[in-house]
Image 1 (cartoon, rainbow, N blue to C red):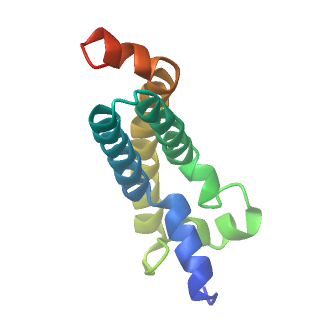
Image 2: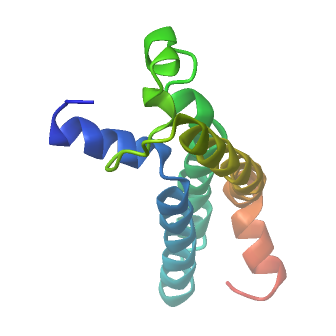
Length: 131
C-alpha cells in the first residue's frame, strides 16, 4: 500500500462516513441560521443538495472503498482504512463491513432528509412562522 499522500486523503474523504455526516449537518445548521438571520428561506433549501450528496457518498461507501475492484478486494486493500494498516485481514474486513452498515443507514436518512429540505425547505420554514 505504497501510494501518495494526496491519494490517501482523497480515499479518506470518500470513505470516511463520519466526516461526510458532519459536513452535511454543519451545512444544514449553518444555512438554517443564515436563512433565519437574512430572511432568505431559499438559502436553507439549497443546503438540501449538499445534505443529499453527503448521504449519497455515505450510501455508496462500500463501492467507493474498492470492493468491486478485483485487485483491491483480493489483496485486502479495499478493507483497509485510508491512513493505517490493520494486519489481520479478517479484522479489517469486519470493521469495514460494520462501518459500511452504519454509513448505509445514516446515508439513507441523510438522502431522505436532504431531499425533503431541498424540495420543501422554504415551505417548511414559512409554515412554522419564519418569513
